[in-house]
Image (cartoon, rainbow, N blue to C red):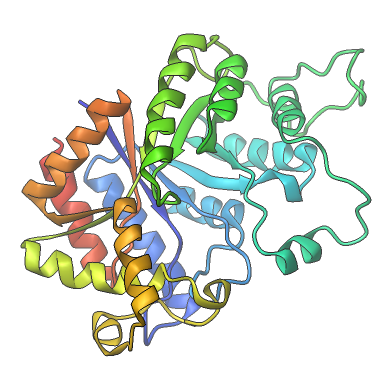
Length: 335
């Protein structure tokens, strides 16, 4: 049976606040563990007012402390902004406190120009993305040899276990890199709005499996797919929740226009232009929407197409109770 995980953004619902959003995230992780989910990941986003998940590593430590079995991870650390050495040390600390439960998901989305400049002030250049990930694997497995440019460096604390590493990607190139390094591959369906890229994802997953080389991080290939999921007890209810996601995904002013994740009521009142209606229609390919029977069928189709081992669900729905209900419905459907 395919394994399920959750990718959470600590979204700040309309009428709520950041502190409540972070508390909601703890409750969702605990519920996911109770329901048998494999992993719970935190996204990294900066300067998006409706998200409280700017520092996944810090949230991860809190979540790992508040749970007992479920794997806790980043979805992902945006490595172009950071020193691979420091990231390795952060995740070794996490792994030391919670051995066998930590996932290091890595991405290369740099955010807006303002975010990129702010996080990289005074940096003359950035490390190549693949080199950053190669460095991470070496620091985490104590494989820095005399040929490495930082020969002699050790990532502290030195421990006997390693976090599970994953690359978050929408490309064949990064699938090949993940295969070569022996780490997991997560294909993000939710950032995509084109059917051509969907087919690229299927090819990327197949390429990854064919070229995978076992490592200390992973003995066998693991493919995960990550879609937006909007599920409720009826199709009508799900469609109402999807309207809020429709509004959110317009992304006006680099997602700064809405300071909170919109309610269904706000979505109903929004005066959509014809161009926005076309964008909404195009965005629907990024979502799986419906009652549990419909959503299960849609997810099973995706699982079959990608030959996925896991599904990393992104339940972008207004209100924490709706998200909890979605997690419960999906857990029962995939038992």
